[in-house]
Image (cartoon, rainbow, N blue to C red):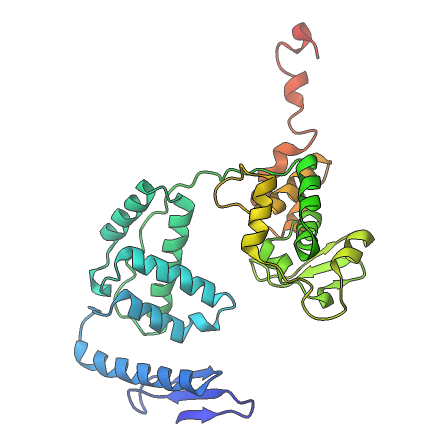
Amino acid sequence: MGIIKQEDGRYLVDLRPKGISGRRIRRIFQRKSEAVAFQRHVQAHAESLEWAGGPSDRRLLSGLLDAWWLLHGQTMENGATERRHLQKTVRHLGNLPVNRLNRKMLAAHRSDRLAAGISAATINRDLYRLSGVFSTLIRLGELRCGNPCKGLTPLQERPPAMTYLSRQEIAALLQTMNGDDRRVALLCLSTGARWSEASTLHAGQVINGRVTFLKTKNGKKRTVPVSPAVEREIKTCESGPLFSVDYERFCRKLREVKPDLPRGQATHVLRHTFASWFMMNGGNILALQRIMGHASVRQTMAYAHLAPDFLQEAITLNPVAQEVGP
């Protein structure tokens, strides 16, 4: 046992750090350097646990994050993004030793961030991620202390402000943009796609008037029909990536057309615009749920009030309807 090179070029780490009767650990890595780093980490930590004897863990949070990345994070499809968010959280917390972090400290940290104008939704997401790090390392036997995030009630979140582009703003946006920027905007407005889904689209995902999104938020592929005109405009080649776009430049052009965008929305306004106009044009809420890829129709209900017949009974069935008239 040790590090074994596989036929496909990857490296298998196969260890029993506590001897033949101990737990067997097996992990596969793309590079030998990663395999060696993992082997050293496991062996060093196994030795430290022999004399520790208690649940106290004096590692810094940054060290804990390194262990999470090595053991689990790098295997996630969006692991690099999650790691960047977690590194920010560690910096905000001051990179404390693990054994000093507790619920009271996390609650105070939340209050400080709220006072600094950070939204409850963002703070909750950051702590969900941190809690996930602790839970994963505890499950893998890397941590013997408890999860300090456990029992911390999430902050109550306000529904986010949602806006959408008017027909005039849509026309202005498509006129302002050109090349791949215009094509991505057109695709988002035609399908309700997220920026990350649209900007990474490949030619093979556009076939026979259907666009299939693979890199979705929930990991499930989603197929949405498009018109022949849209397909002709967005499919400029038969293989490989369809677009080469710069996010910051795209957002600048978007804000030229819609300078009053709510904070934190940017390209997401295109998704809101699709859903809003879908409902205003008489679309079905369940069809919209499937198109948007929402796990629950409750998410989609945020657009229900835009339907032409939404609660129209309030006009005809109120107690003064006959006196006042239509």
